[in-house]
Image (cartoon, rainbow, N blue to C red; front, side):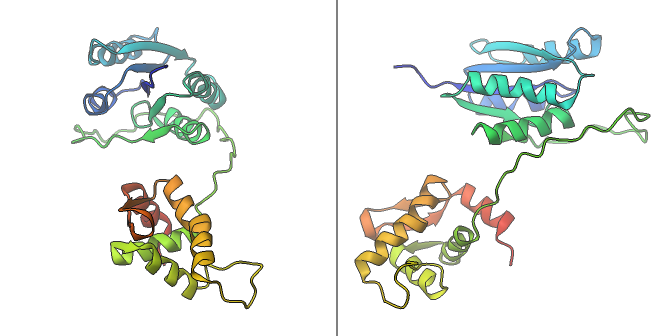
Length: 242
């Protein structure tokens, strides 16, 4: 049986610690270093420093791209790697290589069900009062791939669970009924019995919440209690403002 690997895609920019230090905690079996024009002395310096900062047992693959090409070439590199690594756990560092690789990596990761992550530095080094670029070359329109926000009914379920911290399935389904969110379109005015109500609750709410890993369960069957996962808390924080 093929082992599932932890694969990280790390764009190379002007960062070393933000590229390498997270891998000490989040173990990597294979690392792709996505490097722009690594013939340039500055680019080559950061590429070599990042390579030197990786553990010796990690498989390292360098993928180059033309820094002066358009956004779509960078995006294409991400997609090629993500397709190649389907079946593994793939993570994309969106903070190590600058803005365009960060945007491309975020979009590609969402399209191919990978995990994008942003590394918050411990501190920022001294900044000078001078812009780091100059002039204007062109504007690059970004692709308009649609990423749907979570359904409001599921966000409302998260909001209910959050109000209790931990709650029973019965309590959650009762509140959903009271708020008019849990109902059978074919039942019209007919009241559902407990069994039918629980079947609808599992199909319309419990299963989607568990599949998205927004909710965790403790216990067995109907007696299991529900609580928000870290991902569920993040969804509520972003989309649950009233």
